[in-house]
Picture (tube, one colour):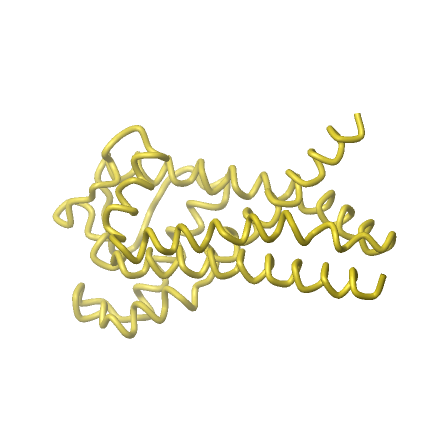
Length: 209
């Protein structure tokens, strides 16, 4: 029974870390803004940077707020297949947010209990193992991000609605592949930083003991 409880605690901790990294990445408007400016996307679509950001904000609001049921962007019409894809993405984002809400408190309590009982050293091995995952994923991305991106979509989506045609879904013109690759890298980096922090904290705790 104790092992089951510990297994649940570790699972909740990692789910909280992963969902938090995803949540922060999704809401990093600054990262998208950099892509708009550095990629000169306003010239591509003939819309100002501020206007593009407003449209992106409308898209993010739809994707993350459960009470918004209809996608409407000021300057970018959406095809039926595009709407279906964004609806699928919305379900995934809402699932991630729900996981974060459910796991963040028990994960924090678990960590606090480790600190109070001088057992932070227990983070070392699980975090060392988990730290390998972003490295392997990063290597796959570096070898061929396009294939990684396709495999990612085929895993999460059961249709091909994510293959946008700019003629019918012009929003794809301001959502370059480079932006998505940077989102993956940023999320992996956030996760890796937490793993490094846990390993370092665990070793410091072990040395004090």
